[in-house]
Image 1 (cartoon, helix red, strand yellow):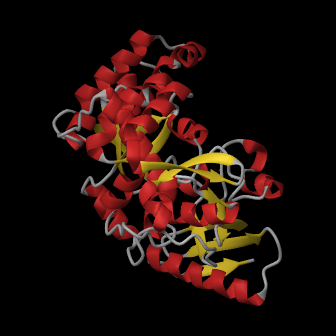
Image 2: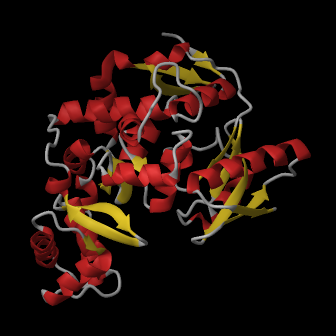
Length: 367
């Protein structure tokens, strides 16, 4: 199909794919539906991951999302690029096997730098497996104490590496927080009925889910998101077959969910307050459709991988925001990247009120 899109048209479709605009064929009603749609959602910061779900489920609250995670509608682990994501529980094991294997293979150098051996890492996985057996759930501090009791030194970055390794091996997963504390559980107990696709089928699933939730975008973005080789990325697209379509965005070849080609392509003047660690920006290597290169430093200060929360209007980043939460109040400071007129300020304030309702906290904001 010879479909050509302008950058603005592609951005309109991409925002629809990302479930930040109404989708013509899919209306998620719960956490499980959103996570299944994406296949994996950035969640290295737990609070950001919860708001990423909330912004796509209008009317739900933070308590609703937390309850869904307790019901195991999704779980957190390190399936791709050594980065924590929310994934459907039944898909966690095969994703670790297909996309996590490269991170696991590259861990030897990191272990050596930390003074750990592969035997130490394997023993840590065994220790955690035994400590969590029988439905147990331990906080991060309790996991590290179990490792220390077994003679493994968890100080410095060693503890983090050993916790990561056990999850990367498919022994543990990250369970919901207890209060402010991260917890871990056994993967096979939290996901007792894993899907086990063959490798080609798995690559096809990854491709179809990525492009339906991020497209139109490039094969290179798909490879960057999954950490797959270029060969595997191409194979996944081929296996997905007619579910995907090739289009041209300006002068660049891109891939999109074929069902989305009938969606409206015109610009929409919507407004969103998004967390920093959201698929909106982190799901792509090339972010030029959404972010002016001149504003990159404001959104990713120092280029260190820590993204600021964003104010997004009509698909483009127009500001950043920071929040401070206590038990009794949410305090938000908004930083426009260009002057906001009175109408835009009013719209941002309305969006902030929606965020406060999600948190079920009174709001104080400043500019």
